[in-house]
Every structure is written in structure tokens, then in C-alpha cells.
Image (cartoon, rainbow, N blue to C red):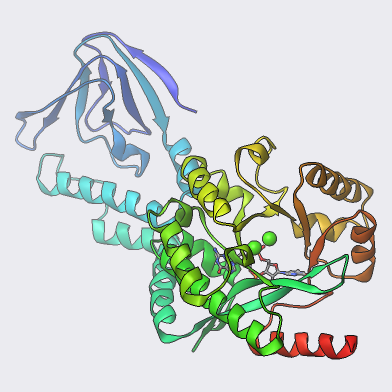
Length: 402
Ligand code: C2E
Ligand code: CA
Ligand code: CA
């Protein structure tokens, strides 16, 4: 927690050479920064006022303060402690974590080299410190994974698998969810649970999503052609919040639909509740345009991302996908069962189509059918599989019916 501290005009806020363990943001007032050089002369570095940060290097390392800061006027400061900063950094993206530590380390190193600090610095060489930062964080792995993904997309190591979605009323396959797969030549299969969060934090997600959308639409057309299920099946494609805020998202979707000859009604756009909450402003307009064009909007991992349900009115949502964690516990735990029942009831009253995710056994399927849940998706019905296997699965189902 940031703490407010007051200093009277003339008081010393930070003394050069002392151990520091916090930075300050100047809320009100003005300060003067001076540095005592090796030869004893005083260097005036300047003044800082409202909104400026002072003493920032101490929130990263344990070296002594490099400057003296005195209040020129009565000051009110907000304190950011080293512990608080460390806690916040731990939650940050590994690349941000590494970059912020390295930037401050470099700055301190520069100050030391400029000989404006005591020569006998307790501070170890910057090379060593930086090395430590990159080793301790997952930053390198993250950057490497993102750069390998970029290559993988070009080299055809990324493909899509499709998981059937079953209509519980007819017991027929109503469509599929497209799920990305990465077969790395050395590392083997890399789970999307591992690489998607990394890609989402880089600038690659938009490119990856465009690729997935086009690939999924082309596959849908080929599946229709091979099975005779013309324009009856839908394809769900996963998107991230960055996709919805990218300027050409809607245009790209329209273009892809027309190039691949897939009907807008057949395309379901999936976005997780958690991601949708991060970009409400941009997402609303984009989703409205997509909905107007006939596409269906699907909320993924429903029930895990947000505490208020008011967004169900705010966004043009057609489908709720109940997260697998609720479904898993349903037949073992009364509370989970009650929760799923309530979600289905709520969704139906709001005129939403309900899909239960992660259905793994008959018992779960029966319970969902009893509740009047519309559709199911899960290993009990079918795992995600290649386009070739999907075509075979549909052929087998058609044969069984005949
Ligand atoms: P998701 O969108 O919630 O996808 C459903 C995940 O549940 C898939 O994991 C699927 O294989 C798994 N699943 C389906 N049925 C069952 C079941 O009965 N039991 C269990 N235990 N799991 C089941 P997968 O393929 O590993 O994907 C993980 C996540 O990665 C996806 O979760 C989605 O958030 C993300 N993802 C995958 N492909 C894409 C993509 O093309 N774009 C984006 N933005 N995200 C993607
Ligand atoms: Ca999904
Ligand atoms: Ca999901």
C-alpha cells in the first residue's frame, strides 16, 4: 500500500549515501535534487514537482541513495515501498519485469560510472546484475517462445484441430470449435494453454487469430463439401481482446467470410469472459457490428471471469459456454450442480443458447439434458481432432443413422 508522507520546506527527504527502501511520488510541493561528487563539489541536478517520482532506484536494489533530495516547499509524498513494488512486479508479465529491473540497473550503473557517487560503490557491476534478472525471470523463455511461434506460423507447424459441439435435442453435431495446435520439431506438442497466454501478450495474437479464422473457415467449407452438410454446421473461433480492438478486425472477418464463402450465421466468435472485461469499450462496437452481420457471439469460460452479470445486457451475446470446472464437479458436488442449473436457467431466461464445456461422462450429459441445456462439448462425445478425422466421424454418424 502506498503511504502518504509529509515534509516541511527545508527538510531532507532522501540523503545521499543512506540506505533507501522506497520511492516517492510527489503529490504536492517541490523538491531539489543535489549530488555530492567524488571531489566534494555539489552538483545541482534540478527540481521536481507534482507527479514526479523520486528515489526510484531503491525499489529495485539495495545500493545507497545516489542523491540528496530536499523539500523546497511543504511536500506531500506517496511512498512506494520496495516490498510493494516487488509484489506488483511478480504479477507483471515476465518481459516487463525484466525490462523494468534492467532499465533502473543501467541508470544506476551510469550514475556510478559518471563518478558522481562515492567511488567505493557497494553496487556490483551491471553486467552481473542484469544477467541475474534475465535468469531469474521467465522473460527469455517468453521471448523465445513468441519468436519461435512467429516462425512456426510461417513454417506450417501450427494447425487447427476441431472439437465437435453436439445439439442435445437432436444428438447431432451442430458445429465445431477450432483449437490451435503446435507441433514443434524438437519440443514436440506444445499445449495452447502454454503458448496462447504468451502470444496474447505479444503483438502476434492478431496475426495468429487472422490465420486461425481463415484456416477454420476454409476447413468448414471442405468438411461441408466432403459430408454434404451444406451451410448447416457452425465454426467457433477463439479470439482475444486485442483482436476486437484492432482496427481492421471487422473488415478482415467480412473479407474472410466472402473469400471462403462461409455464411456469417455459421461463424461463432468466442471470447472469454475474462478478456472481454479488459476491453469493454472497443469490444462493444466491434461485437455489435459482427452481430448485425449475422455472426453469433459466444462467451467462453462463462462463470470464471467476472462477478457482475450486468455485462450480459451490455454486450450483444448469443451463447454462454459454461466453464468445464463447473461441469466436472456437477455429479459429485450438490453446490456445483445447483450452480450449473442456475446458469442454464438464467441463460434460458435471457434467451441465450447454452453450451456445457468439458462433458466427460454419460451422467453429466444426462444431467445437462434434464436441465434443458442446449448443447454439449467434451471428451465424452469427441476430443478435438484433425479435419480428416472430423470428416470420418461425420461419415460414421451418417452411416449409423441410415
Ligand atoms: P477453450 O477455448 O476453453 O477450449 C476448450 C479446451 O478444453 C480445449 O483445450 C479442449 O481440448 C479442452 N477440452 C474439451 N473438452 C474437454 C473435456 O471433456 N475434458 C477436458 N479436461 N478438457 C476438454 P486446448 O485445446 O488445450 O485449449 C486450451 C485453451 O487455449 C482454449 O481453451 C483457448 O482458451 C486457447 N486456445 C486454443 N486455440 C486458440 C485459438 O485459436 N485462439 C485463441 N485466442 N485461443 C485459443
Ligand atoms: Ca473456446
Ligand atoms: Ca472454454
